[in-house]
Image (cartoon, rainbow, N blue to C red; front, side, top):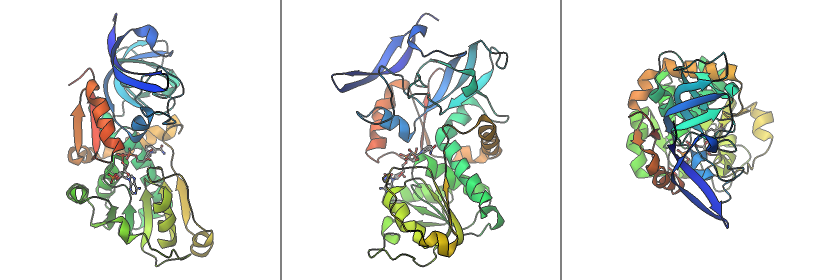
Length: 332
Ligand SMILES: NC(=O)c1ccc[n+]([C@@H]2O[C@H](COP(=O)([O-])OP(=O)(O)OC[C@H]3O[C@@H](n4cnc5c(N)ncnc54)[C@H](OP(=O)(O)O)[C@@H]3O)[C@@H](O)[C@H]2O)c1
């Protein structure tokens, strides 16, 4: 192909310019595998990537997009063949290496994963990094004891967002029967209930004014996606032997807590990373996601074209976004 389209992010005098541009292969970062990108998806990190001082992009110009799925069109590795369907999420994609908001992407072979059995290119991008992070959080909680009790009192924070909404649906699909969703707005309630929330609460329910060192034991396990003060208030409400997984910082990066819930209730804090995790663990996680195809049908997913990305990322920034957004690039 001589030229193709990509969403290009450039900087001039501290001002960012993000829009559709016709580029050619020389504009892509180096790599062993050239992929014709069928789909990408929108994540919180993509929103940060297009903000001045968002802390995601290492150098300009850049093509953002931390997720992609497509077909191999040229390969310098024996591990991947022409026409093979693959996906890439995380690593430096869309940060220091040109990413998924483009008709073509070129990446190192170590980042590329064959499409898991039983799912399509579209399916894996409906899940995207958000889905991978949701299942990694669930697997960590299950390893910490959740799998032994299907009636455990579970809380999902940021339940209206990408990670949170997929986590709700996956928890339901895995048989958990006592799942509470933490949301902030009225219009989000129908969606989280449809995804499987048994109970819905607002921040007022967890923000106790005079924060004691230990509070009434409310939850056995918590899947957190927002961090900050929310987590500071939830840790003292975890039941004896419970665990909380942390993957996000939408509510802030500071964590104000004491050691008491840890040493008096034996609770665990589980850090979740989807970016640098090994290919072996990724594959394991994707196989789990592929088992739950019924979840894909109930997720709230909007499909958009490349040029619509800026307006949807703006909604994400303003907290007006719900569920998942799939970007259809060369397949519709
Ligand atoms: N560790 C990893 O590998 C990894 C991977 C993926 C994502 N993440 C992180 O996970 C987080 C969620 O990502 P996402 O893609 O799901 O984002 P998203 O779709 O934008 O969802 C963000 C969610 O957080 C909620 N929220 C924001 N600020 C809040 C606050 N102050 N208090 C309570 N809730 C708040 C939002 O609620 P409203 O709708 O009411 O605003 C929304 O439900 C982000 O911080 C992201 O960086 C980490």
